[in-house]
Length: 151
View (cartoon, rainbow, N blue to C red):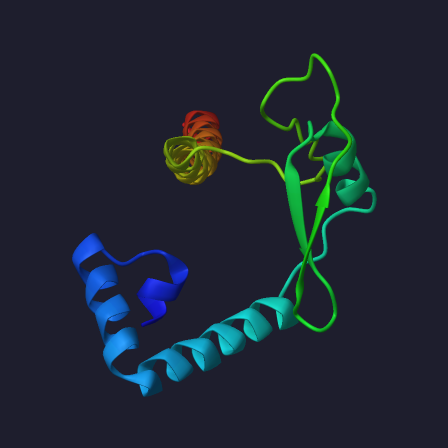
């Protein structure tokens, strides 16, 4: 029933639910209650749009019916003022501070990050190894010089 209300049901499932609504009034009332619950859930968890969005939509619509629900859940229809020479779609400007990256780029960034850490550790290891070898060479030179002065 949820899939039917959300428009995710196949045509066969939609026909089956519509037949059940006609045959069984309980199904129809259950669908109405479920629709109210889903709508209430959506309203409770809704993220408000940026200020001025509704006015932008109204300004850009071209004589189409706009449905808006009032506080009682009743549909109100009003006709938007027709605007000549406007396209059939609405341009919505989004100004958010989030960077959107394709999934493959995220994977590439992750791989580069991990490889950079591996090379950093390897570089530090070889640096300290070379430093300790240099100290060992200096120690051996001093030992050789001491042995030559003793002779």
